[in-house]
Image (tube, rainbow, N blue to C red):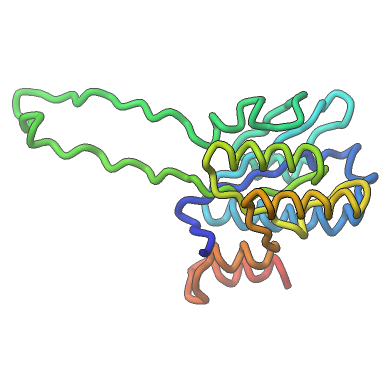
Length: 202
């Protein structure tokens, strides 16, 4: 099963200015998160960011925040407890058809095509064994497909990060890398944005 860009969303968990210096391999992790955000932005995919206790840990870097559709401040470790699920799966409100005397009768009117439900969540963040893990488990519980980008996640220790991956794989999350995500989003070398996205990883 490949990641389908038509039903994908990107979630970036807690890449905060005061937290990242303490994270194992933090620079590489942040660089890959930015590549994901830039590619998603180019492709027009929704990008959601979160910030844990921002008054203590700071905000997301400005360049990352600028690429996010919305950033959620949170105190709960799972972002789903703070409104992420509602962002990922917004309620669809349908307006009653409005017309005039020349409009077609209602039974002949075609309903507007619904936007595809974006049930595939590409997820990356820190700390992998706390906020990212708990968010991923809640998303799986809510029937999302969850793709955890391993080279864009980390914790303060390598052991904690790896334990999160073991648990997530057992729970049904797919473990992927940044390049896997980007090329699956593109699908073909003939994609009009192929060169721009390829440039992100060269």
